[in-house]
Length: 278
Ligand SMILES: Nc1ncnc2c1ncn2[C@@H]1O[C@H](COP(=O)(O)OP(=O)(O)OP(=O)(O)O)[C@@H](O)[C@H]1O
Ligand SMILES: [Mg+2]
Image 1: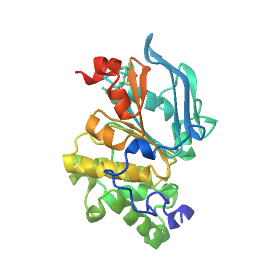
Image 2: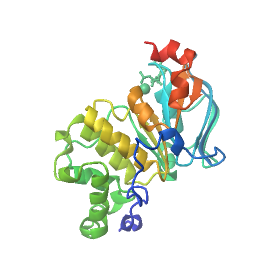
Image 3: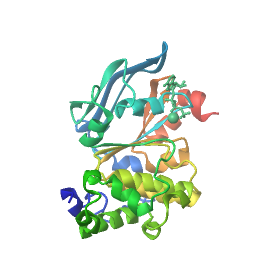
Image 4: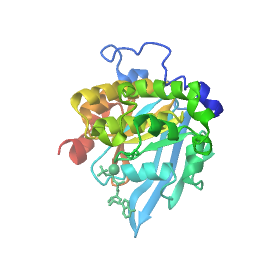
């Protein structure tokens, strides 16, 4: 049996009530110092046939920080995440995760170190139930999936149930994933990442295709799960960004154009010029 299955991440089950968004601004929840940064991107560059999609980009994300990355289409946001998770090799620069250089590691090694990635389009196993999707996402589950012991384990069932509740899918465990709404598929994919208990979660447009109510729930979910790990979220919906971001990084033409609180970057004339004014 998977030894990790008996306990669920402290951050999946919050130990205290979340502060009301009305009372506490997201920026006020940001970690006090950047010295405890979990992610350091240094001079990261990638060229595709001479075109620099990401160009000498540096940024740091602190422990328990929820960073949002915004910027116009083609700014290099997805490409940045691709390089952090090892899908794309940088031409120059490096990525440090908890001080360890990820730049030459394979994707599965980076996952094992504790970096989870959600792609722009939800990718769940449509023919499997929600419960089975969670089950196969449990680390080390593959080798023991056939074992009755593993399948019957109360700890595994409890882990799946808790995770399903966390991502609002407790009533959908027996449903085929293919029958979920687009928003529910996004939640399922987030749950499949959370069950792996990553320390850094990279989410590419997690509320795309979600209803206003689903967005509201997701903003609460992301704030909750950021208390125990760091999140980098790419998003276009500025109302959503304002609700969740501790800090916002604005990308433009592969470079950092501005960085700071949502309020700060929204008031920056350069940001309005290339992005928000459109
Ligand atoms: N594998 C690739 N080969 C060639 N060009 C690429 C490749 N991947 C990305 N690009 C180019 O790099 C630039 C940045 O793309 P990227 O997908 O990172 O933008 P983005 O900021 O995520 O945009 P969007 O908001 O539309 O998702 C674009 O001009 C894109 O066409
Ligand atoms: Mg993108």
